[in-house]
Image (cartoon, rainbow, N blue to C red; front, side, top):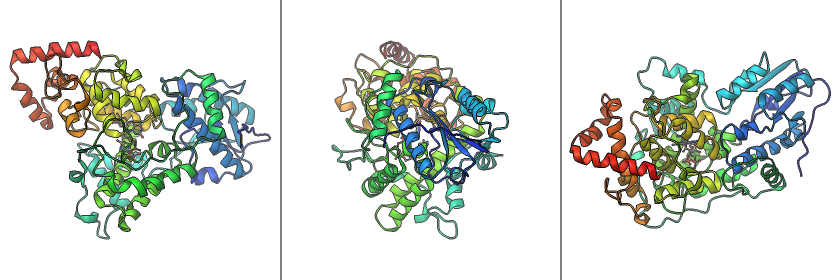
Length: 512
Ligand code: FAD
C-alpha cells in the first residue's frame, strides 16, 4: 500500500507527539489514545542536517515512521502526519509543533521522553505545558539510575548490571544468585578466529513500496552521505521480529565466543544487528532478553553467549541511557584530554593505507553499521590516540550509523571511546596499539604496516599513536592506578626513542 500522509480534521483533546525513534507497537500510552485525541508525526529536514547524515539512516527512520503511521490508522488512531515533501513543512520539530498547535488547538500536548536533550528543549519551547512521559520501552528510568548512582564514588557498569539482573529476575535463581555461579563469563568471550569464519547468513529486509518511495524522495530532497542504496534494516515490527528470530536461532549460540573478534570483509559476524530495531523501539529490550534466556533454558545456547548478550542490553544499553540523562546537559561537549584535531578524511571515504581503517569504515559507508569492536578499537581508538576533537567524532557516529541516537551515541563516544568525560563511563582509556588489532583480527596480515613497530616508515600508525598518546597525556593519567603498567612501560622508553615516536606520530597525523 503506497503512503498517503493523513491529516486530522475536527477538535483534538490530547495531541501526542510520536518521534521517529518512538515507534513502539507495544506502547499503552499511544494505543490508549481515544477518538478525541491525535498523534502528531513530523518528517523534517533538520533531523538529517544538524549532523552530516547517512542516506540509509534517514530512509530507515522515515520508512519506519510511515509504516507505524499506517499501523496507527489501522488501530483507528487519528494521525496528523507532516511529510518531507509537504509544501507547508517548515522542517523543524519546534516550528512544526507550533504549527500543529495553531491548527488543532489541543487541550494538552504530550510526548514520551525524546532521545536527546536537543529535541526535548525544542518541543518544550514550542509547547508551553508539554507533558513528558517516561519511556516504557526501557527497563529503567533516569530516576532509577540516579537513585542507584547517588552516593557512589564510581559508576561501574558491572554493578548496575547485577542490580538489573536481580531486580528483573533475569538469569538469577530464587535466592538472587547468578545462573551458573558467576555474574560474568567474559573470560570465555575473547576468542579470535584462526581461519576464515563462516557465520550464519544475516537476515536482510526486502524493501517494499514505502521504503522504495522514501528512498527516492530522500535522494531527491536531501544531500546525504554514505551509499544511497536501499537499506537492509527492518522498518516494521514484523520484520524486526523476523530478525530477532533469525539471530536467536542462528547466531546467539556462538555470539559470546566471537564477540570481540574481527575479520576482513565481514562487519556482521555473529553480532545481532538488532540495535537499529531496538533504537527505533520496534522491539523491546525485555522481549529480546527473554528470547535469549529461553534459548539458554531450552539448551539451544550456552550461558557464556546468553549472559554476554543480556549484559549488552540490560547492562550497557540501560547504563548508557542513565549516564546520558543524569549527567549534566553539557556532557556531550566534554573534552577532558583537550583533543583538537579534525576527523581524518578516511572516515568519509574508507580510503586509508591502514587495512583496519578500511575494514572498519567501509561497512559504515555501505550500510550504516560496523560492530562494537570496530567502533571501539578501530575508529574510536584511532580518534582517541590521534587526538580528534570529540564533537567531530560524536557527530560522525551519530549521523553515519543507522542506530545513531544521541542518548546512546554520545556516552559511547564521549565516555567509552574517547575518555573525554575523564572517566565517568570508562575507568581507563580504551587505547591500544596495532598489537591488539593483530591479536583479534587478520587485518594486519593484509596490511603494509608492522603492528610491532612504533617508529620507521613501516611502523603501524596505531602503535605509534598509542605511545605518543600516552606521552602527550601522561599528567592526566598519573593518578589512575589502572594506567600504572602502561605508564611504567612508557617510562622505560629512552628519550631519543620517544623523540622518534613523536616525529613519526607527526608524520602519521599529517597522512591521516
Ligand atoms: P550486539 O553486539 O549484537 O549487541 C546486542 C545489543 O546490545 C545491541 O543491539 C545494543 O542494543 C546493545 N549494546 C551493546 N553494546 C552497547 C553499548 N556499548 N551501548 C549501548 N548498547 C549496547 N549503539 C547504538 O545503539 N547506537 C549508537 O549510536 C552507538 N554508537 C557507538 C559508538 C561507539 C564509539 C561505540 C564504541 C559504541 C557504540 N554503540 C552504539 C554501542 C554498540 O557498539 C552498538 O550498540 C552495537 O555495535 C550494535 O550492533 P549489534 O546490534 O550487532 O550489537
